[in-house]
Length: 111
Image (cartoon, rainbow, N blue to C red; front, side):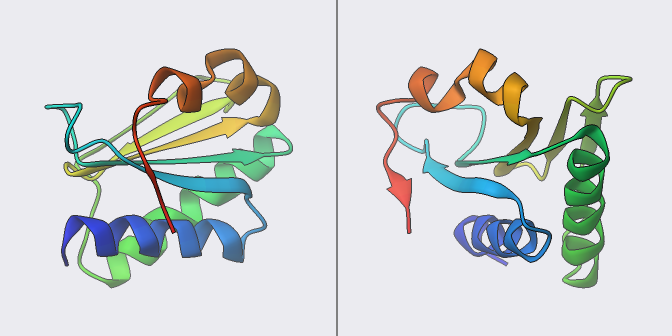
């Protein structure tokens, strides 16, 4: 799959589990780290974990296993690295604190 397709798949998987305000940022022109960021919130730590688990299962079915998954011990944030697509699953309050949409404000959102 192409990176943009992976990002859209991840956004769809987030929506399936009622992820809050999932967005895709196209950072190809402003970052050497990755091509797309997917950012989504969960309403609680179990919701954050459920979102991340659904992403892992759904991408695995499409043969797109994550390279690495990192999370804090309280499941307030989880980062899922698919190489050209990095997903940030945040607890709502944690997402507001880090405000990645502002940090990557020059990146256009993908529909």
